[in-house]
Image 1 (cartoon, rainbow, N blue to C red):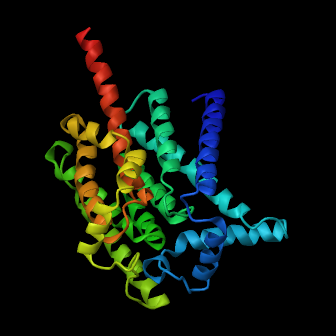
Image 2 (tube, one colour):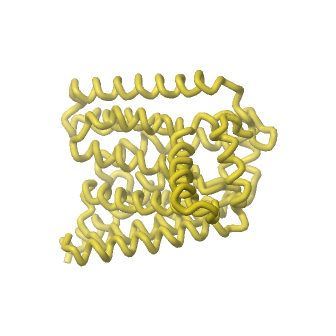
Length: 326
């Protein structure tokens, strides 16, 4: 890409990120900023009011606190919310760049089509605000999954080990990352899983377990905190399925992409098919059974990693087939 194109792309990503941050910071359906600041301070002090699992998602809190410390040292007395908004802005820009690179190595050739997919992502992010805060750990989760996809598709397998370790400090939902390395290659069309891939996958899983357990030992283990007094799987499922607002919120986040992708599933490249089967069903079941699904930001990882690129792939495949027929 020439320098002019890079400037245009950067400008587009900045504008889209500004829009997402604005929606997250001003949405009446989101947690107010004062409450977010208070919750962050409690988490840093090891006293999160929602201890399990929030207290254990420490990476995003440490990054945010570092930004706050630098900001207060450079411009003391200025509005406290600035580092919060700045980190959210930076996260979105990084996600858009990673998505662009990841979609490209997946084989989507039209850069304007990729940009259109990122526009879809920005609107999906912006609409995922119900009962949520700026959700730094969620957006770091997206960053780590996109990075994993790009590393695997470009053959940089060994980096999955440190990536998994860092990602586990951020959020326990990164547990699929080690398995992403072997899932596509089990299919003999891609040559099978190599010894190196097995070793790296096992090492990554060990790293995940060590960090997962280590954080809980450090802060002390407490039972999981239920939302609205709900703790059981059955109660969560009933709550989610009966909460009418969940359905339009899910449409606002996913749009119609899951329907289109399922209809064209067999036309997708093997890697997307395998990652879909590895992640999407379990991800949806877990978040319906152990969380409030109306907080649709919880589904942004499969949206970014699988549904959007699969949709773009189907568009490009359809366009190519029409050219051949013509």
